[in-house]
Length: 330
Image 1 (cartoon, helix red, strand yellow):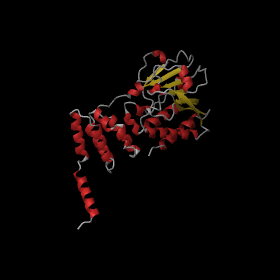
Image 2 (spheres, helix red, strand yellow):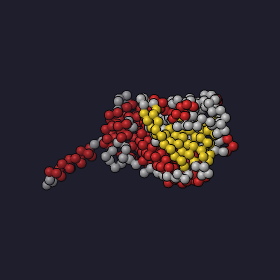
Image 3 (cartoon, helix red, strand yellow):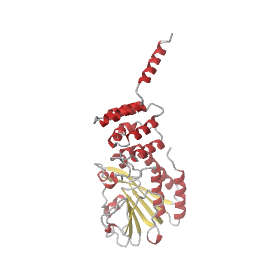
Image 4 (cartoon, one colour):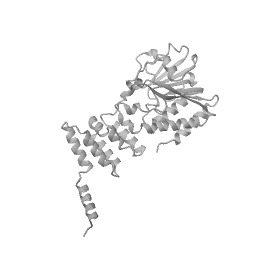
């Protein structure tokens, strides 16, 4: 005769076996959604039950496949509360979830709306303030704007050659001498400037790497930026160590990976700073109004200037490329 504890265990097992499977519960949720019902709580209960199972990741993959044609249902499945349940998945798994969600028919090919909605007409005074620029004479220098949009600096920086790489076409040709419509996070986007002399300055203000969406994009940005510099050239980034716009805007799925990418940026910066014979690295704090990137109030973040030491460009580029090959997120 079974003991009382064994009877309780048997009843629990029987109850568990009668519980609808993930597949059948998801099918019910899809049916309710098609009838116009609110299924946010149903999705939470589905994920909350599934996360204790060893096949949680596989269940998420199945849900993406079944819900890929409904942007609102994907939003219910990947609401902030549900995504917090996925934090213990490996980075590779979380990154794959992000990639698959963004590849769904409702999202495929879309640019991040948060990028296109930003101010793209910043003045020289804003660049000087946020990038900690002390120089005032840029005559004869090559300057690369990363995500400079329609910032019209030609009249303010007379004598300089300005190149702007941006996802979008500028509204005016007056913004820069040369415009490249492209993604500076893509591999091989090295922009050496006039006469292949390299860029004396690379300016990244509320652009990259804060909008990089993956390990590959983050690494490509640093590789492209440092390789584009001339000897004694300077890469200026503000804010550094900030990936939150991707998580705070409508594509909140990126909150699954943004902290990992910020950590990767820290590791890359630390690798660069560990070679003072090749790089001169200086950090600074700057207050700003997050409303510039969609928030409110006043905040403070870190900016960084990275200068290649005179005569060390080749060694600096080779060192960074080697470091990037070995840096990973577990």
